[in-house]
Length: 422
Image (cartoon, rainbow, N blue to C red; front, side):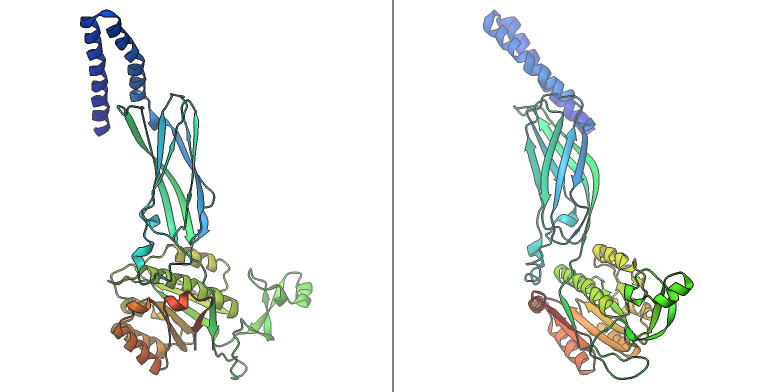
């Protein structure tokens, strides 16, 4: 309705100018008035044609150089416009309509240093390109999206505006074109410290973190995707005419569950949460390389559990989950975690990553510590935003034997992040 009224108004204005010159030419007479009238006639016809020219029928597409990237990467975009009628156009402005998820930057180097100022990395992304198409049927407008933040981003619209040289007739249309960009979290350089484990055949402690005790084979089984090439039992493979791998004694302490606190708090620091997500991915990667089985539990608006299995697809599922996860939910983390306590096996080591700590939190950590073999907590927060209450809770839990790691912008900006698990 609004566009129809706008077109009617502009058409009325053009007709008024035409009639005004026509009346002037008829009553004034002479060469000058006739020259003005016939000189304005082509302009009038051009504006009339531009007014009825259907730019909404243009074929507009968007091409991306990559659909899956890492946080902080760049994506080259090309907006291509094809039109069947080469109507002469003086200018054409193309504007990308960015979603709210892209109104921040995923700076790899600066985001940890500015963790106490989370608003610093918010930006107002605006991409506008102007071109003078003339009679061209195909118009290409390239641009680059820099420093893409973590998450799933949906580019959904391109706004195109054109008009005449005098500005009397302007046309605008929004083309709904959908493209997806997924920015995976970056893995941080993490070193796990002082993890003591014991084997089933003995109780001697071992400072090294191993996937399996590959010196003692307890049996054989069918080959499964993800098994190492060195585990294949060639003698049994030749006898059975199918691939067979050795089974080894598992370490008692190799079952580890990483828990991420994805609940929303009144003073949630978005940059600290981003660092917690990246640290979670890094811990899962390190533990998967160094231990036999690692599970992952995400507790937030919707909890998700990825069990202790050797499924090769589990890593991809976790990566996609960590890509899209955002802090949410109204139920406090301790309450949500009580509902998920059955996922934490009594003989497992639990590594909990969080950005918040309070008195209720302290109670649930004591309960987990009594239930599990070992509990390690990683608190990720800017040093200036760690309250006095949180510092007291951290000190109290340490005195009770719970491993507490506090990672601030100083530790996260270092070349190697050290996390103690025992």
